[in-house]
Length: 623
Image 1 (cartoon, rainbow, N blue to C red):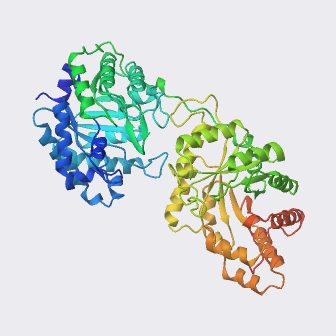
Image 2 (image 1 turned 90 degrees about the vertical axis):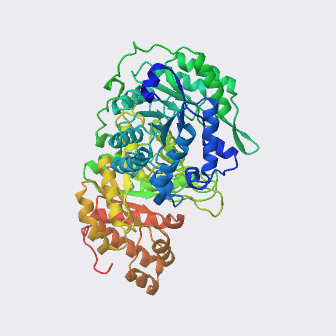
Image 3 (image 1 turned 135 degrees about the vertical axis):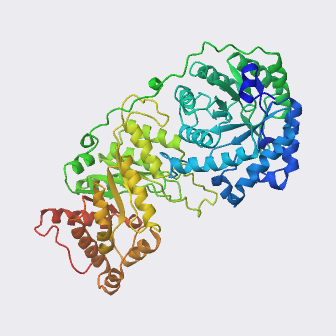
């Protein structure tokens, strides 16, 4: 047989179709590890490969799409990585014989990598390299990197493969109907970048049907000199009696194969929903079609397709809170949560009252409370519009994917919100709604990177958004995280990305706070210490036992248990903490415990007195 690239230069080649669809049709449940079947049911995998060869496929992909360390570890199979990949090549090679080339299939890691996730690019490259090494050792003819939504991850995979092999690389992004990747990167960006990264054949697969994919391929043909590949789904999935079915006919897929060829595609196959019948019709169409002449296709376009970050808005111009912190003024923020139901008059009035008592902003928390409640974003907008207060929107990653979060925050900016506290968030409660789930597509590091990019006038796909946003970015820090080293690393990542202030959970343990204060101050970022508007022993017990990042010393419990007036003693403890913290930090974030705003109001009044009194900065010795 000729080499793969040599053959591709002479004619259009046909790749196989879906492996997962065929395994599912043969009774393999979706929650199984399909890659493990190379070891446990090799005859079943071989049967599918044979069907595609008989249908006319020139290229067989190994059943190793998810056979990387990260995905296999979720099934407890990471120790079998090499064996699964080697066996995947062996099965495909036996079916291909001299009739088809064997392509080592490599898919995404199944996790987010930097800048959107906590996994470093070097770690991702190491994982891809490990899989590619096993596939190369097994004897593949080429590599197919497919179904990537993140351009950073795909280029990391290309570098990893090229580090262990000089075999041809086919690199495929997965796109939406508009031609942009699932993370919003347009062909104008990813096509030239894949060529620069060293891919021999580039294109798209999965997610969409032939019609939408053809438009993307036509756009890519004007952007790159590399040969093109297209592997569409058999249309969009339809829910039929609880099953996802792909309903594009083999004849329809074949008609688009001819159009792909006319647009310059040299490798054509199928993804989800495609069967040997689809591939058979595509093979017939390919044999009778004339490949397009792309000898005049311009070489790869350089950085002109990459948008340039814009100068950001000066911090002090972003909001009143930002200006106060930039000027070195001590600030106080108070929490106001959304109640159940539609009546928000009380919380709006309460926020107005906080402002009158001296709060510079109202923090609208994004806690995962059950019941029908207004979203934190909607409440923040209402408070700014109806109460006339500046807000700090607490925004978490829990309920949204990266694209949804970007849309939310662009909308929030358009509605006038400027201060954001970006957190990963706590899982959704399972009490009221047992089937409620959490998303966590990215964590707070990825979210911070995304908002910083908006502040540079770019979306997550690297495209201009017209003007830089002016978000004032806050991040959280857990004083008592289970893994302190990891928490510090995460904080430094967030600060390096562009975080502008840090908010801590409520502080009760001053010695413990002082122990980490020096390193916190070394970040150069203003610190807003959390203060609980404490009103009772029960609240102190709740905070200590059930709120992440809070530690209440026994001395405080002793004082509250022995006090004649528990509420007065709780307020005294809180004021002592406030007096001590005011000399240490740049502001306070007052948490309202169990929705009681009375203590928070009393605390604001006392803070006003402290602001005017002679003993500011003095700290009691018995807290």
